[in-house]
Image 1: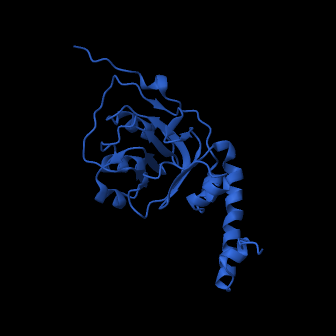
Image 2: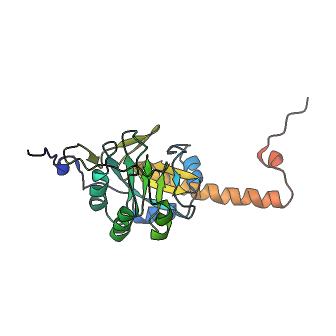
Image 3: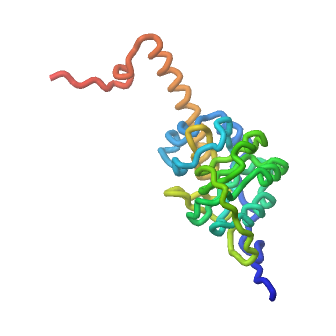
Length: 226
């Protein structure tokens, strides 16, 4: 009996516009929280998604993946649709409780020169992933296996929604120990410049605090006298 197969090229885009490498390099030096604030308090990916290892950091343009639930074939395909420096951003149809990614896929992605992955689900091989050195941000660890359905429809480089944030291909993704922020590509340059200024301003605030001033006085939060 023949197995129905779906042509992955029919729902895969390869010609996306990305934030520039120069902008990614600048963003990589900034905290995710600062970028979020500087961009107008937007782009916070669900707080449950955190780095698998505390050393993991990511910065790069998004390659988005809409994967069938409990299946990781489309994620394998995305590794080879992405380009060096890209960050995979994966939505798994709200089926979190599978190990969608492990040491083999991390090794393949690192070999391809990808910058990292953000997945709205779980991964496995937790003790090995830090040693491989490919940064992964996930909801946690789960040993439950996944399938490979060649007849299932998925998408690569179509917008995905994680929580209340929609991520489009080419958007700026930055992640650190605090979490992950996604900044729309058209706003990324403005957000990075604003974040640089915010960081400089906060350094000056901390200098004043160390010199003896209070946060209440610095920010003008005194209660008016009657």
